[in-house]
Length: 480
Ligand code: ADP
Image (cartoon, rainbow, N blue to C red):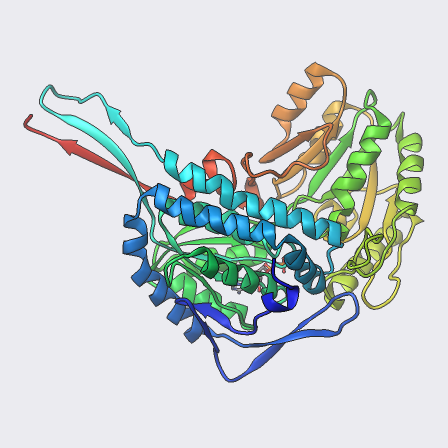
């Protein structure tokens, strides 16, 4: 295990070298106190081009290796991440504000995609299809798509990278990662570990820099890049989609969400409170599967709300490096203002602040519950991305479903019931890519993660996750 300071890097990692981009630098700040963690060299469109060329050159030899050979290197990378869990978690907490126990969890979760896909790469089976004439034979083989551009957000500085590069590398693709300018340090730490694991030069590249739109444009428009995989906002997903038109690039998009959490009358209320707390306040509500709207049956509304507010009162906000802290800061001051605006809007439309409701200081927003929420409030339609839990009331299953589906998003949804029939009916009726029944935490490397509607396309994790990185080739042999 290396000390966390040995895992702090300040340049982009391109073609197996640490490369300064332009002569400019940018600062990575600790959101808990605004202090500077490190100054990094500022990469730009040209730096991305260098990485694309390196990945392009590395593609053929990497794709020609057997899946087993690739898996050996990936398994080493996985083992190095786990061996350095504590140092990576510390860096992650410093740059994202995530409580340290959540960061440790993310190292395990993020690394698991490398281990899982190292094995899945060996199972990219083709097909033999019965011929349509007596003298023909038909085969299908699967081949890597090519160079992949991965653009990732700050809320999972490790896992959003590994969920993309795990399947890509296993399938035989090479990658250029452009991590968020808020959290590039975790990405660079794992680049160092990738080098130690033995990836050939140019297979895995990380380019850091402030100018996201210039870098994204080069990735999208390069004829050498075959595919873009993006996690972030729906707004940026739309920009990237438009930029990919000229090269008809394939795209996987994991975008925003507006997760409903429905508590039916027959639910185990204590379990529902626990699930709602976990699903809402993980990383201070800053994940795309975080609960956005809690919908509670009118007959248990008072009981659920009282218990939920009590559970929220137990949170301890603070610097994530403190082992006893379970709510960290928001990522930046813009995020604080956004969350404040949601609360102000709700209060002006009849919402009741049951706990919290304001910022603690310039970095932290208090865990908040808003009662009497209604459909006119902004968070009914928009993603909160902060520690604010609005509670809505409903009276019938039909009403709950209508409310739950009344959004452009379709990523995660949750409901609590002990009724088997209801479980089936509601699961089928929810217009979402993911449904959690009696469970508030649903992410795993073995399950397909992804959304419908404005939440994007493609799936990450599971046996399905590798399909986004392969092409299917049909081979016909005639005149046999
Ligand atoms: P979030 O709200 O999670 O920050 P964004 O969509 O703004 O979501 O950011 C997700 C990632 O996309 C970040 O790495 C960000 O720097 C990057 N990004 C933002 N704008 C663009 C753009 N125009 N082109 C490419 N990447 C972008």
